[in-house]
Picture 1 (tube, rainbow, N blue to C red):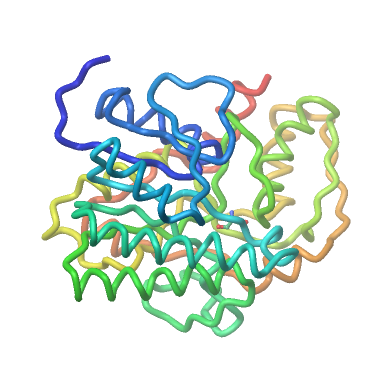
Picture 2: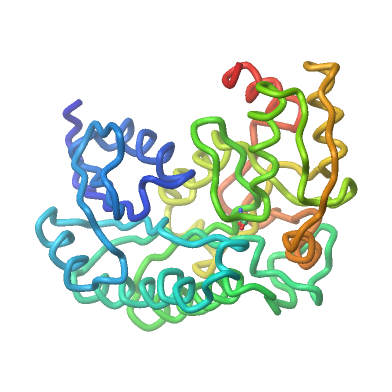
Length: 313
Ligand code: SER
């Protein structure tokens, strides 16, 4: 595809759960050759430019930006909440130090726009659990949450001080069939589908009644593209926007899956991730995104379950 575009995008962490899907959506919109994917390993297939990039290496980052005349960066490389607790230094280096370098390199190279994925992990026990507001108490309890919340603060700073246009979403758990996420606390909501189709049973590492906010991948991609293309005057938060599709507990999700696979069984054996989940919100008030740039999800839980099972089966 050859689309005339003055936008040249670099996506870091493009092999991850969101990257693999977002890359295709960006290439459909801006043309394959205008979206440079990057990660630490070559992916299986790729229909556009790809660079090996370890995001902690700022001189390599600079090189890739200059070589491809990059104008926008989507910084998806990150370690998630559960894996992050196993290596706090590496998580801080990747999720925050590397991001801080990106912000500085962006200013030095006149980058026009940055996308920074934040998370419901920025919330903590002091945050209201239901309909969590955009502005609230933030005392995150994982290194993942701390690194992402710090990123949000620096987004605001770089925007005010250097005029860098940074856009960010607090993704809830993202559900998709294209790949299984690794190292997160919300991963169960993806694994459960693959196990339901293959083995008709799933052992869940969260308790039955642990509600968490979630979103289906097509909506997560839509929100990302809509926010990134929203006119600047519509963007009232350069630190991050609350975002949500729907909320459910493992028991509610299992019940919905049973409507399609009646003999599906779920068992519960909570592990360390239970504590992380309990420090997060149960539901999110994303009215600011709805008001500012007309955010509205297309999928509810039932529609998502139907689509996941159709694609996995
Ligand atoms: N999906 C992430 C995690 O579970 C939350 O943003 O760590």
